[in-house]
Length: 311
Image 1 (tube, rainbow, N blue to C red):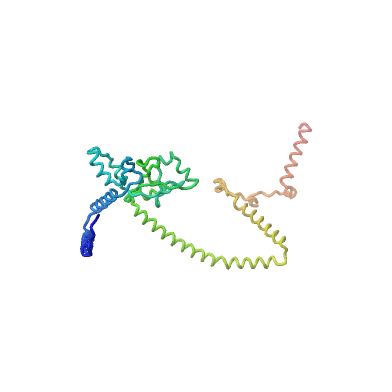
Image 2: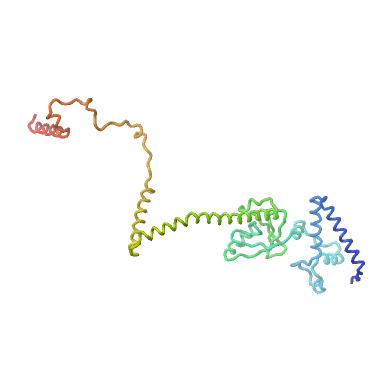
């Protein structure tokens, strides 16, 4: 049991904490990114070692003795009992245990975490995307905040296993970025969407400003022209106009102008009426008055009579 502290000791302890925080604030600008990362990793390890772990399987005697599944307490107990035969965990497993966790949503498009979509072979084999067609569901994932390329999905059948999901091509623009950078990009996009909505409202206002007077005038003219006609007569006129307009539209759109042949472009134009000076005029007026077709028929008739007479 901790001894009670006096007000003076509490005040001194508070001053010491304030002084330590002040030193941190004054010197934090001089720290490198590696040092900050190591300090954050150390803080995460300390928190992990002091926090009860869900899903940890410990022997029955530990449970009966009231031992919490806290890594630090288990270490202190087993270091005495097992003496060098402690469990060995791979570096990959340790890193996976230290990563932050969150709930991802399984949809038909993929496994969505924030604004990114992922997929993996294990999810396809288990038919997660097909099941999400009947309704989305949640899965537990771990991820590294520094990179959005991959996430680690916890195996619901075995809490000690996981499988890696990769970013889909629809989110390929986010490859190589951190989750914070993706959040900033999506925030900027949302600002642009709101600005676009304002522009859309403005354009609708300008559109109706032009269209409404025209529509009002058209309705007035329609009422004047249809005054005195029955409802059936008005509909008949409208139907006839629609049929006529449809007919004209079909004639315009169905006609495909063919290419002009080269022979027609370079052909020499021959006048149908020859020049009188170039054509010899017959002396006999009767011959001149005979049409070419009639003279030809006379010659055929004369030739036919010659054949019959044996000439």
